[in-house]
Image 1 (spheres, one colour):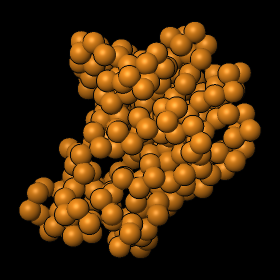
Image 2 (cartoon, rainbow, N blue to C red):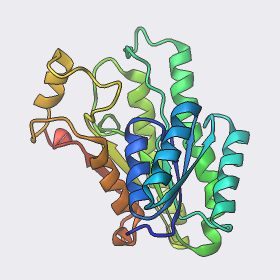
Image 3 (cartoon, rainbow, N blue to C red):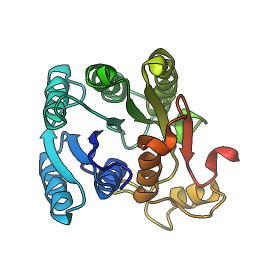
Image 4 (tube, rainbow, N blue to C red):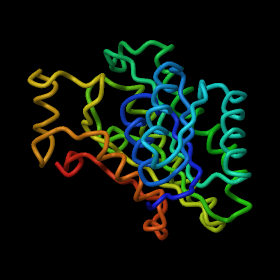
Length: 251
């Protein structure tokens, strides 16, 4: 129970990596506020987590690119934590499928990637810090990508915003380290989710070939990394980029 009685927020948690992190936090005894735009899936996940009985989860429908909605979500978590928020995971992202290279990427793809991944992270970080600073403690985890560390083909907007999250992480870690706030990023590689390429497809084979382990990852493996960074076991780790990629970025 490494997160027992911790108040946590996970954005974009109704599906995929965010869901894996929310489930991992709850299993370690945390209260999890699921902030996501998908109301049906978010409500169901909160119910499932609470029924399991380790941690407790609640859902609040949130468009992370809307600061007013973010402010409301953070206030709901703070109320549950009696004024305190211990952990924030900025996971929400926009992925346009198919991705586009620089010659084809439309302005709306740039805009939505930026509004969700960067401004969503900014809004949640800004408002959550107000509930961490009085206690001189807190862990913020930003979900970047291997594409924040190395290039990938035909994904200009997505790669750009994931790289920007690396800079955001380092800068906030620098600014708030003296106040006891730790800020780190996880850089997942090929993780199996509902939008992953089908096993056996050409893209899937390329992903597997880029890893040392010869397989794609699972969301619970990213969740385990997030639990570590959120916990007191990572008390001297800040400003770090943690690849969870089966060795992809070592190639």
